[in-house]
Length: 498
Image 1 (cartoon, rainbow, N blue to C red):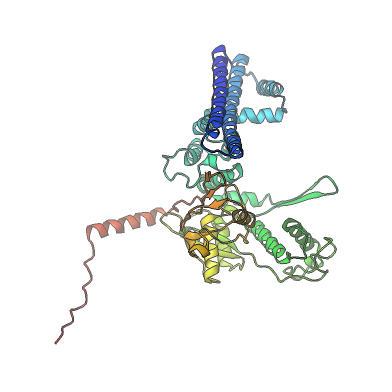
Image 2 (cartoon, rainbow, N blue to C red):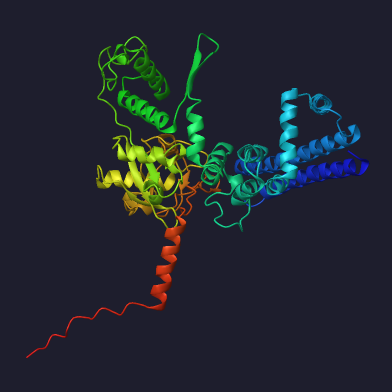
């Protein structure tokens, strides 16, 4: 890094610290006026300080990225062109080692930082700019780098424009990227990537199926991890079925948590005597000999039936396009998987068709149609998860909640219903947190006890793709109708009175 670059970096660093100090002083000034309650002033100042520090952390991360990129470029120039692959590898190792030592981190972490800095400074200008402005965090920037891997330059620019350029066509709905917790942003970015990846999801899924496996990893205190890498429909069905069975076992005399019961059920299903042959529908014996509390061994529950929503573009369902379908709680899946779930009549899966104009949910399958069930499923479609900011709970037992209480004149229409998880339902009714207005297609936001408003995340629908020949046919029909409108149908003959 030359002296001019060093000076610019130092100046930017000083400016960031000065701006942070001004923000904190402003928070103190704002909190010192208006509210006579000293405790409220103290709480408000603390929140404003946290917000200012979060902004400063993002800007500091941007400076670190720029400095790492500048050093790598300067070191490469100083070293000159490598004369062999071995020399090139040696130069890279030297740069990584220097950065690792100056930051006191592992060489693996230093290598990751240098790679991310290179991508941000050369291929993702909107992401770097948002990080410099403090509108996204370092975690968001790393996710953007990760989700653009293996995309061509046009694909990478389209992905970051979708989330970071408000003027981009079909800009992301709902919260801005920086308003989502990193895990939720990763889900939305991955969903967009799956929809727009240049390689068909069918081909990528076929390769992924070849890597299916079960992994075992010992852990501390006599415990271990057992995980399975499976096709999404199988994994979602297993998860929802074990959750449904665990919920059925909960009660006033059950001391285990939902997670503990779910783990016990999975262990019994895998290790039980029925694994070699007959049915595996029951959960008999799931409580016996595992937990210290619960029902007696041999007392089972009826076979649970999970209810997983599969949102299928109509053209994809007909086999005319390769657009991904959406599996509730997971994300995009290959259309062949969705067609198989629908065609096989899988009882756990409910088909949802989408509007061919804008991608919004259009119809819930009528296999087991009842008003209350249909409303609940519509809420799941509208919200995608618990609508509380940052919550990722997709559980089937999320609870319908009147935004305006029934006792105060609230209706039971979709516009007056939220779908919070049990935890955030309790939060609403035991604290001053309150949901805000919802619509048919948008979940409610939330207002905190301090009066701050936090937007809720929306499912990021987008118009489905029409096959070229159908698109041309539709345009031709629209043109003909415009040029040759059909004559009005004759009205009824007037009735003559005598």
